[in-house]
Amino acid sequence: NGFKLKEGRFRLDIRKKIFTMRVVKHWKRLPREVVDAPSLGTFKARLDGALSNLI
Image 1 (cartoon, helix red, strand yellow):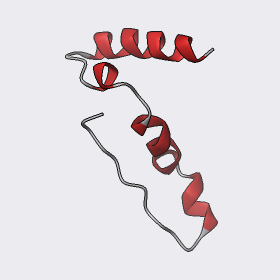
Image 2: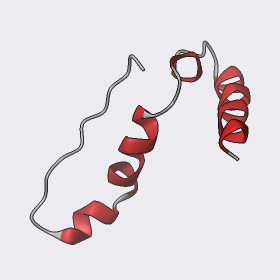
Image 3: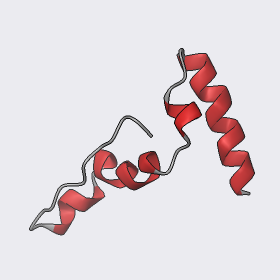
């Protein structure tokens, strides 16, 4: 997708458990149409569709 997040490298394992660090790889896997949604409601609907395809 067009909105890339970077994963940081940390010496301490506790930093790896922070929410923002855990979601980076999941965010990168989202389809572009989900990330580029024009509104929050559209994002949620498209995210539900993308996640339901995984099950």
